[in-house]
Image (cartoon, rainbow, N blue to C red):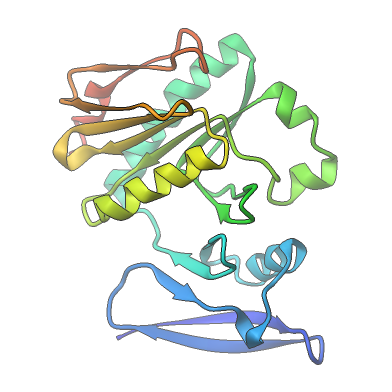
Length: 220
């Protein structure tokens, strides 16, 4: 039995309350709206600050999802992805890069945290300072989701469709255990790349970006 204690603001008396939730499995927890109240964006942001030791997402129905921490091997792979994207971005200066701790408020009202995200300067600079400081209210043009060995493929694919539905232009779903990458595009096309001897392209979203998948082999 796994237990997690969370803190939230009671809207009736404006005081912090505690709740302990339990699960038989160490996986993703899902909470219904607390105190029968669906939190608005500001309330959800404050809720995340009150529980900053836990990573949360929120679906389009207002349900709060507690996400598991990343293990060491997955963290190394994620670092390789950010390094390559960062080197490309530093040279081209076309946008901003975000890691897995940044959450975005999507058009569907869901709040999601991709493993890697990229937002163009034009769209980032159009946000106010307050919007940039909290959960940015936009969908990144490019996201990467990196699966661990225990992640469910069906759930991961559904999540990628939601990224595209919310405006993502290019998304990579990387499955190291099977050496597979699924590429999702805004036009609805999906490619399956098998084998980490391939090179991924940023296409017209991230011009001239190339990522050598063989870098992900060494830590499998």
